[in-house]
Length: 380
Image 1: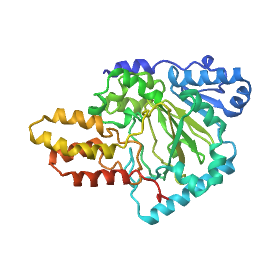
Image 2: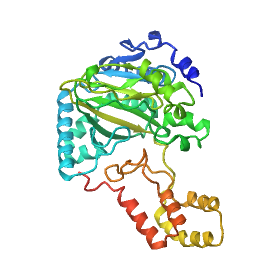
Image 3: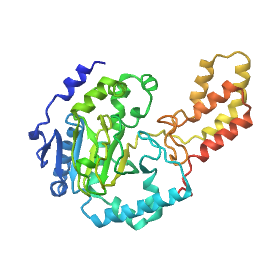
Image 4: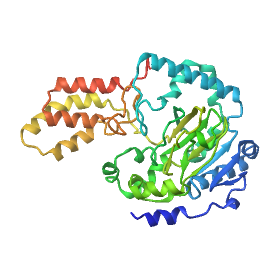
């Protein structure tokens, strides 16, 4: 991994001629007027053309599109904002933790699982908000049908500091050590499993810290292993772009794009964004397996094999087959990423139990607590 290789990739210009439906290109970012896109997709042929153009922008282009006026009914946006403020107030009153992936706990107001909480708090607003046609257009363009939407709300007050530049879920949430275990073709696969987006719930001038981006950086293959390097972060600090947004605008980007929220240096703007993460239908297994039940059943035998001298590698192979090795999805209100970017997985809990020689009752309790942390009932 050489910084020079990343520089070569991101030096490619964004050509306006490649995006005939766009309103223009600003700082290398393709900007669309949502009213234009709505008119263009009125026919099946037009919809196909717009989808192909969006995919080109997110894959071979700058990796980011700004959709002006995506949520053009500001009353709906304001109603959603009011509902989010109600949830924040409830959670603060309850004394809940406020962990964050990329910011110090408590630095911002964050709502985990804002999608479910909005649905429960204000169903009518939820329906009006998520009936949005532009969200469906860009989601189907990138992921196809049967996608799943999740949402996190971030409120950054004046004085809120910038995030470090990073890539996003999936591989972007893993440590360098873990990400390096995945082969190169998985690094290329990860971005097409997720679409990242953000809806501006207030006007966001540059001084309020809207997200910083490095256009075209999603095309740098080793980027999941490079983004924490000091030279990459220094380059990002000197060459990022940052666009102001207005209420109702939306930004969607390839999760492999290097990006990070900016510092809010405004005097009085509370930056409110609904962060959307849209997931591919293909990110799940075919069969439903009660892995806690299966793990509890085989755990006594694993203890016996360990006592008989089985290697840790052999035990890990069995654990990998029976337990859930990935910590997501989870309830981030209860399963906070406080000591890292990911909570413990079921498999890690079992491996730790084996190493400590814990009995089956203790493992059962740990797996029960693991399952309880993933429940969302009563979270609002």
